[in-house]
Length: 171
Image 1 (cartoon, one colour):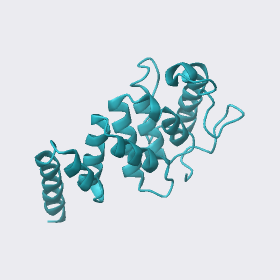
Image 2 (tube, rainbow, N blue to C red):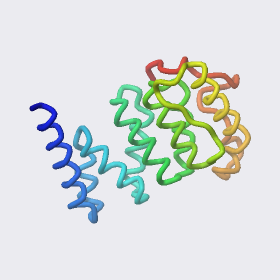
Image 3 (cartoon, rainbow, N blue to C red):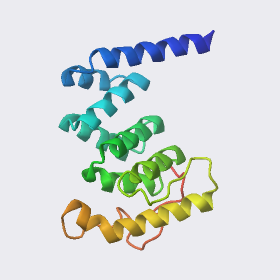
């Protein structure tokens, strides 16, 4: 019974997002809702390039106290949009974010370099750490070019080239 009710709520939430999908103002209002409807609306705003939605998603991705599902959804939206301005936030969340968030960030980064590797949240920690190190090295090499400014390739919070925090640690 609970599964049926939850499925109906998800369907209703998605239908609502689709109905107001043509209105950025409507999507901004829906993006404030908790759960799947809010995540879907915020993702739609980011994919459209909406400035307010993008700023909200960047703040959400950086908020270590936010629901990991919301943060992961923000990372997915930035990957779909291929927004270079989101790269520092994606790298910061990749380095030490909860496994669900870090995995979503690794997949989002592949939108910028399809040759890069990603991982899933249940992959072995040593495999995840190796992928994180590869993305950090990629950022050090390409960050300045991608963002068009000097020094942009510094890994956020990582002066020494290693992981900022153990993968899966709260951030």
